[in-house]
Structures are given as C-alpha cells and as structure tokens.
Length: 93
Image (tube, rainbow, N blue to C red; front, side):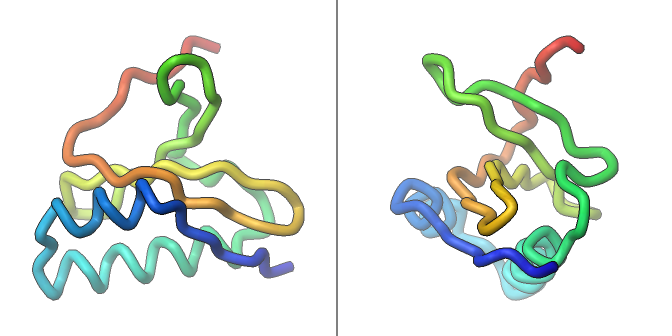
C-alpha cells in the first residue's frame, strides 16, 4: 500500500540549506519513495527520536550518506519534516 508523500516547509528549508549534490538528491528521492511505498514503517534501521520539545518522529539514514531523514506516518501518508547532516539521539526502548 503506497502512502501519500508530503514534505513540510521546514524540510524544504533544510534541504535547500544542505546544498545537496546530484547524487545526494538522487539518494534522497529514492529513500523518500521507498518509505512512501513501504508496507511496514518504521523501516529496518529506522529509529524514534524527538523533535524538540516533544514531538515523536522517526529517523532514516540515507545509505552511504551522512544525511538523516526525519518522518512521521499514518496508514495514509508519510510526512517528511526534517533533513539533518548529523544523527539525532535515539529514544530508548
């Protein structure tokens, strides 16, 4: 089941400031598409983190890149909210 993919204004701002090269843009687009089509979320290797002050999000590292894609989801959509160049602190289980 594919979910609607949405991006927040903050995500757009982060992506602009990151000055991604062509390969990074390609990796980002592929990762967003995979997450949008994923049957089960969060994906393998993804983990929960907090967007300050207390909003839960999941974090996905782009393979081969030091880029971290923050997202939340429901059965209907995946919302990409941030893109960072350093890993966040995961929540303890």
